[in-house]
Length: 343
Image (cartoon, rainbow, N blue to C red; front, side, top):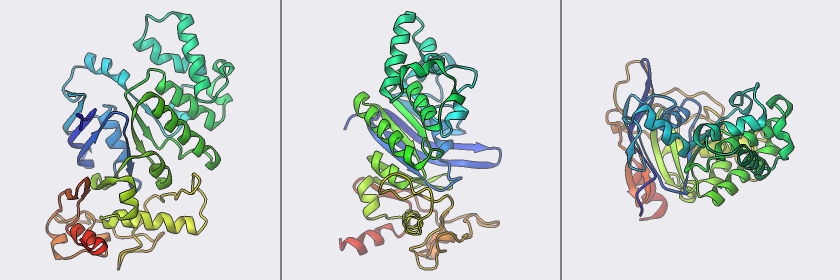
């Protein structure tokens, strides 16, 4: 396999005494989409922002095409930024209300392609607006004159105008109406296929993540607890926390809760505790978080896990390859795999 486009090793992000990301490894290849899931506060956005250097990591390395972003100069980092762009959760907050739509999309071109003629720039902006499903005449308008879905299309257009090699999407559809979410997801999928862009996609919506991603990483309290190919993870999760997320999503959808976005998709409830494990809290019921005062060792999920045994309270399980391409940070992952597959 070719060398990864992005290689992250032991990345840690701390804000004062709070550790948001606690030593995560990521490999992302050209054209691949890695989905990032986990409840609110699990460190998804902190990890993504640290990767593109919007947040400063405490320790670790981020290699972009073999070059360490953590140690490169500000000038070099500025040059590299044209290769990775970001789409944020709130389009209204990410677009400058004083700039027209055309000016917002033109800003990356002004920074990274200043030698373009004005006519060339205008032509690229008009073409990109049409590519994301907007009339080129909307370029003269301001963000407050557009709907939320239209503003997010503008944000996608601005991110893709430079044809980046990596697109980081941080909950890009969670603030949109359900009827619009599928349109934006399909737009991102189409653009990725056309441009060959790698994507790091963060979402609470498991259906959306399943639709877009080749592999899925599950974060819990800033740690990767499971990493697996998409269909294998949905068919047979190996970590109790992943099982809890899937069970909670199914429960929410079955109950008819609003926000179950995308056709056939299950919405991942924020802070949803476990449901399928013996002794775990039912969906919608608060569970005791791990890491309570006095807890200094052991698995970070042990106090919410119905499968915990003695070793879980004393030894922190490393992220290990259980079977080829399937990783889990659980002392009993091999048991779960063998009991369900008979191997």
